[in-house]
Image (tube, rainbow, N blue to C red; front, side, top):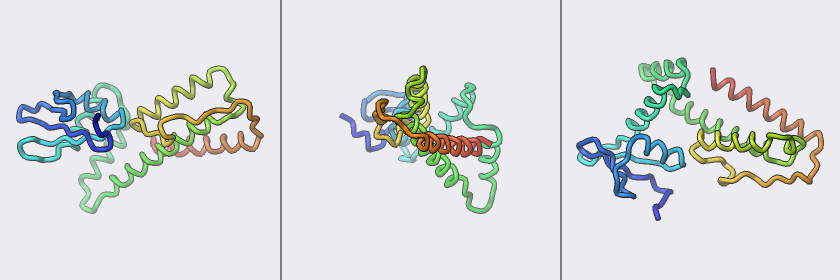
Length: 185
C-alpha cells in the first residue's frame, strides 16, 4: 500500500517519459493531474540531473487546461502574474495567491457545512442534489481537502432551527459571496 502522505515520486527519463515509482509504470500529464485532483502531492525529478521539475510540469498542466477552454484564470490575473515576474522588488504574489486559495477552501468548507446542517431549507426538493454538487465542486477545487474529514456532517431534519440560525447562515453566505466576488476581479 502506498504512503499517501509522502509525495508521489515521478522520474523523468532522458526520453522525457514520466515514470511513476510507486506503480512502476509510465504516466502522462493527465495522469499526474488526476493524482493531484485526488489529493495527492507529486514530485517530479529529472533522473539524470536530479533537478526538481515539479513546478515546470504543474505549470504545463495548467497551460494545457487553459488552452483547451477550461479557463479558470481570468486574463487580468494572468497579466498580473506576468507583471509580477518583471518587478525588481520581492513579489508578494506567491503569498497572496496561497492565502487566497486557503481562504477559498475555508469559505467553501464553511458554506458546505452550513448547507448540510439541519435547517428549514434542507427538506426542499433539489437541496440534496445542490449539496452533492457543492461537494463535488469543492473536491475538484481543493483536490479532495474539504476541512470536514472527507465527509459531510450528518443532518438532523427532526431538529427545528430558529430564525436566528437561518439569519446567521444567510449572513455568512452573503459574506462569502462578497469575498468570492472580490477574488474574481
